[in-house]
Amino acid sequence: MSKPPAFGCQFEFTPDNRAVIIALVGKLDPEAVEELHPQVQEVFHAGLRRFVFDLSDLEHAGSLGLRLFLGLQNQVKGQGRVTLCSPSPELKSLLEMTKLTRVIPLYPTRDAALEATNI
Image (tube, rainbow, N blue to C red; front, side, top):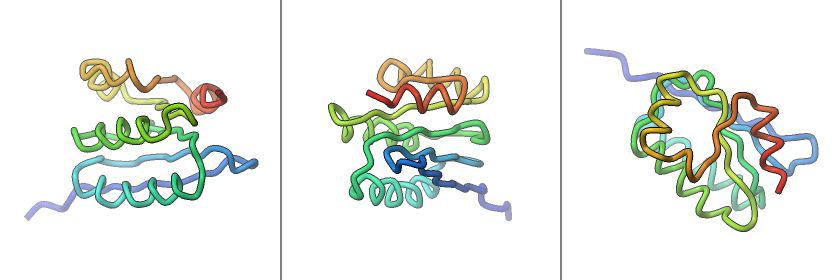
């Protein structure tokens, strides 16, 4: 029997508590989305509208993971912004192929992504 895919996430708030950087690790599969979604919604309901997802340690994102990003972007539309940063070449290719980057901008670094959330 194979070991289930490992997933982890770390929430880091900016000093002014106006934005959150969420570092994702491992595989964003359906079980991971089930774990991550309520945490993201809790932050959203607390009033934050600026989200940066750091994908530097994310190995894979399934369709539900991409849907989570898109759904959050729709929630914050007009009030904030969702950005993605530092994907692997494979993940970047997936994001571009699915045209998600047309809706959610992709940046090479955390700092650039965080700066872009300042609307």
